[in-house]
Length: 100
Image (cartoon, rainbow, N blue to C red):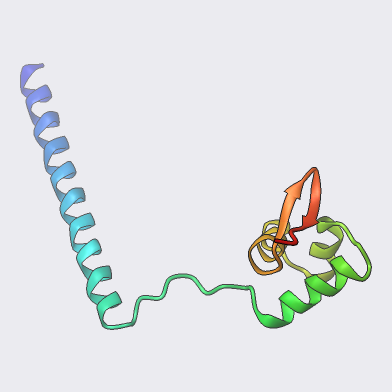
C-alpha cells in the first residue's frame, strides 16, 4: 500500500512538472512570435460592412439585437459589441445612443 502511494505521488509530481514546463515553453513561443509579428490571435468578424449594416438596421429600421443578428447571420454578442464599441450605444434597459 505504501509503495503504491509513493509511486502515484511520484507520477503525479512528474506529470505536474511536465505540464508546467510545457506551459512555460508555450508562453515563450507566443512571446517570440509576437515579437516577430506572427502571433495575431483570432481574427475578428467585425468589419466596416457589418458596422454599416448594423447601424442601418438599428437606426433606420429600429430592429432588436436578435433581429439584426438573424439578418446579418452573426451572433447577438457580436451585434452588442458593434453597437457598444463601434456605434457608441449604451445599455439602458434597451440600447440607447450615447450622445456624449
